[in-house]
Length: 287
Ligand SMILES: Nc1nc2c(c(=O)[nH]1)N[C@@H](CN(C=O)c1ccc(C(=O)N[C@@H](CCC(=O)O)C(=O)O)cc1)CN2
Image 1 (tube, protein in one colour):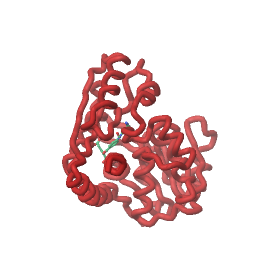
Image 2: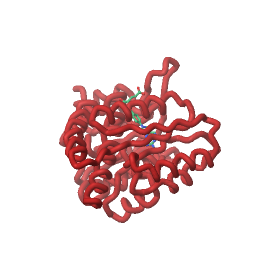
Image 3: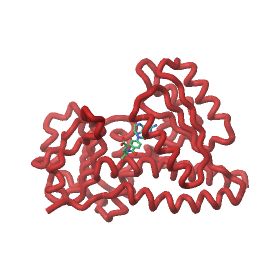
Image 4: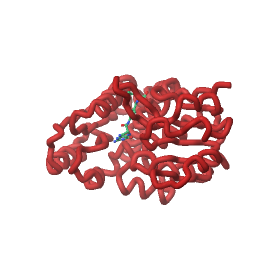
């Protein structure tokens, strides 16, 4: 039997149509949410993701502010753009597209952002608030995964979840979201140093595969009926996406997120949620 599809594209469309109404309400109060993006370099994947973010903004009525720098940009030049967006009143939230080119101190750039405008939830103060269980913008991909699972009624409460990966955008924050009382999952974090990944995967009710290793999760390593989220993005020689999950997993799993069309569109939708919520907070504080 084939797994049910965790359709991120359709779920994101529903989120965006609800957001369009909230943006219209903000505009009626004279508040115009504006998303800024900082893109450094010419990585085709990053260019595509940023373009998608601005397409989404246009759909829901959020203004777009785009800053692009060449791959040769210095730390100081990137920091100058970050300082400018911190001060720009038209920019109510923004992101710095990651990864930044080699040699750039990414953490220093994230630290420089105004945490009140951090639409990615990656500023150290916001990650700290997540650890402390305080309200904060949530990192978009983990937030999108939780929303997707909830939307399709996949049981998270009490589930054994295995997260594969330890990067700052997904692997590190994902267990923080899943172990909140509202989600109540038990999480095992695996990574390239994990000795017997298959043994962990076989016990999981939910697998979040975010290692960037093509077809790392194989059908024989998945518990029948498990929910499997494919976050990995590698490319074949034609530029086509190859995920972390082997296609044969669809015959064993109970739920599977397509890739593309699963977690990617949810990442973008949750970014807009963060932008709208920040604008709503700003509107409330000036009312
Ligand atoms: N500042 C950030 N940088 C990065 C993040 C992030 O959350 N914040 N996450 C990833 C990339 N990412 C977001 O920027 C992202 C990945 C994928 C998609 C997406 O819509 N994918 C489509 C397929 C697009 C394609 O064909 O390549 C899909 O899955 O259907 C959007 C955003 C790293 N950097």
